[in-house]
Each structure stands twice: as C-alpha cells, then as structure tokens.
Length: 131
Ligand SMILES: *[C@@H]1O[C@H](CO)[C@@H](O)[C@H](O)[C@H]1NC(C)=O
Image (cartoon, rainbow, N blue to C red; front, side):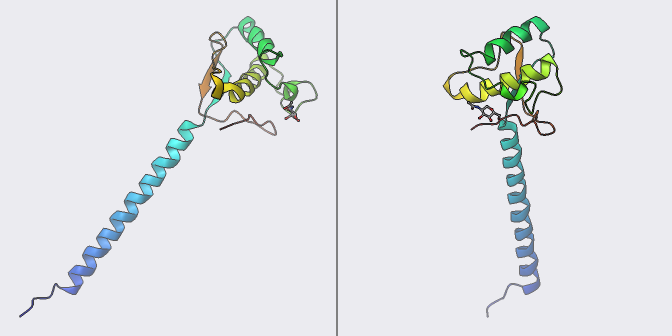
C-alpha cells in the first residue's frame, strides 16, 4: 500500500519554499540596486580645500589643458547659481573627472576634490555622470 504524502503538508511546504525564493530574490535585487548606487560617483570640491587651492584647480580644469566644459558655470550658464567658488569648482572638477576617469584622470586636484556617491545636481543644473 502506498502512503501518500498529506496534500495539506505538501501545499504548506511549497508555499513556504515559494515565499523563501521570493524573499531571497527580492533582497538580491535590493543589494544589486544598492551596489549600483554605490558605484555612481561624482567628483566635487572638498570642504577642506582652501579658496586658493580651489581657484587654482578650477582655473586648470577649465583651461585647454584640463579640458572640462565650464560653459555651464559662466554667468549665462545653467549652473552659475549658486555663484560660489566651491560650487563652480565642483562642477568643473566633476566635468573633468567624468570625461577623463577612463583614461587615468583622477579626482584629486591637489587634495581640493573628492568623490561622493550623492548626486550633486540641483535645480536645472545637472552634474554629468558618464559610464
Ligand atoms: C558644453 O556644455 C554646454 C552646456 O551643457 C553644451 O551646450 C555644449 O555643447 C558643451 N560643449 C562641448 C564642447 O561639449
């Protein structure tokens, strides 16, 4: 005589397994998203930087040598406001780093810059994020 596995128990077990699978895949997706966000980086001016350091680095980043596109922080540009040295330097540092990070460009500017995971974009001023 064959002893059948109780149907109720079977249903209970399969429901439990389904819940476990769903819970696991959910947290895996969550971790993926967190890792992706962690991987997004922008280069901005450091709080520790001096005005002299920021000005020198900003001038260099926006020069032909630096190669950053600083048109957005000009008086007619969308990132002109807030019109502070630190905000303008952040925009230029990030534009430079996004462009050249793949070719060995660093986010340092003699210690005046650092990488952050929070998007510094504000209002209509978008800080580029390049692959
Ligand atoms: C520089 O940035 C401005 C504003 O985003 C854009 O319109 C312009 O095409 C850019 N110039 C270059 C050379 O990438």
